[in-house]
Length: 78
Image 1 (cartoon, rainbow, N blue to C red):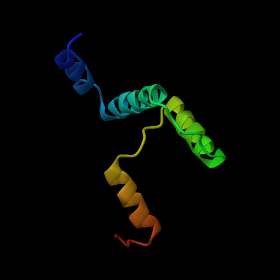
Image 2 (image 1 turned 90 degrees about the vertical axis):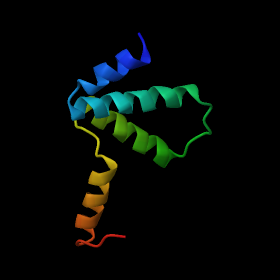
Image 3 (image 1 turned 60 degrees about the vertical axis):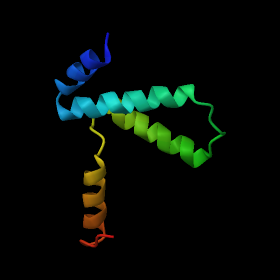
């Protein structure tokens, strides 16, 4: 499969599925890199992220994260 074919398949997905594909790529690419031992908190956060992805809940985009932060800060934006 060519890069172009992969891109076309990805573009045909709805945004939620695109996010799941990107999260999957991130997850498997992290497994290929040598990693330092992580802290218990890091492990817990990775476990929560995996559970969210597996549940089908779409991950927030960077823009959605900024919006949520602003809402939680009472509208304050950096």
